[in-house]
Length: 79
Image (cartoon, rainbow, N blue to C red):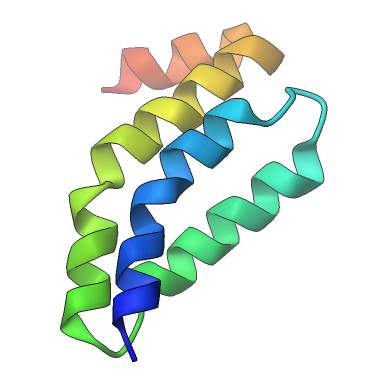
């Protein structure tokens, strides 16, 4: 069923934000899992991933600013 996968999308920003800045492997794993949900075969799961994209992007950017402020500033300049 897609309901579990679709519902889990809302947990990604919270989970990512609570990770320590030093847990790079866990951050990479969460980003990979999110990408897999965004490419899921069911439309409802993809919709769940798309709905939470903004908050997840904000969480990843905030975490990047903690670990590499120069890279975070460079991303803002591109936007």
